[in-house]
Length: 248
Ligand code: VOV
Image 1 (cartoon, protein in one colour):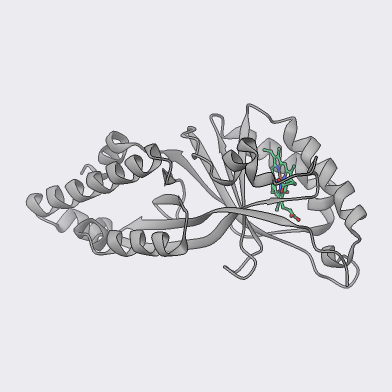
Image 2: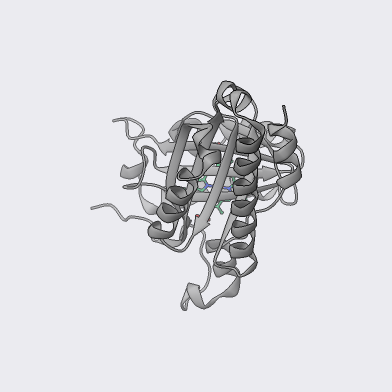
């Protein structure tokens, strides 16, 4: 059997995409809308205190285009916590005015393709910071799921470790040239959701998503083996911006 890459897993991730039912929101009376906004604020504050105590992280973005209106990206230690928080949110009055648009379940993943040194990687604070990342609050987010191809002629999973490592090195070099411009969080989802990875990118310049993804299309690992799902792009929301977005 071919050699599987070794992976390290960190926090579980839930990308929860919602659309607003604007008709119902408009038809709600002022009091109901005020209760709904109050609940939304309480959740945003709770998520931010979880983040401050380093027990997880949450990023909130509006979504541009018709695929959704906003996304909550949550990172938590366990699937139970993710489940509890989505259920708690679904029980709110605010959630009654939202429609589920898409969701993605995965876990923060690092592979050993480019790993250096021995010892217990989880004893390394830099590795732990990558496995349990505090999500950047950059101006823009880009999310898409992807697979590596398993066709007869182009099957990633039939390549030797050395061939895959060489391609991942080239991938990493391109990625590194975007240091300071784009931050990536790769989450593995084999056995968890419909695609093999979730790719979440953060940047203060949305054009850098286009430039990075385009450049990677010419790199062998993406050019030959990359298969991509739908792309979601959005703008950072904080409590104030969320309220403005919901204002009628
Ligand atoms: C912002 C830039 C950036 C940087 C620096 C970067 C670097 C790296 C390194 C060093 C490594 C390998 C070790 C590890 O950390 O796991 C990876 C791993 C991975 N990547 Fe990446 N990637 C980036 C960015 C980046 C993008 C934009 C994409 C989407 C590809 C595209 O064509 O749209 C991507 C995908 C992945 C995936 C799916 C994996 C796991 C592959 C596997 O088979 O296991 N990635 N990636």
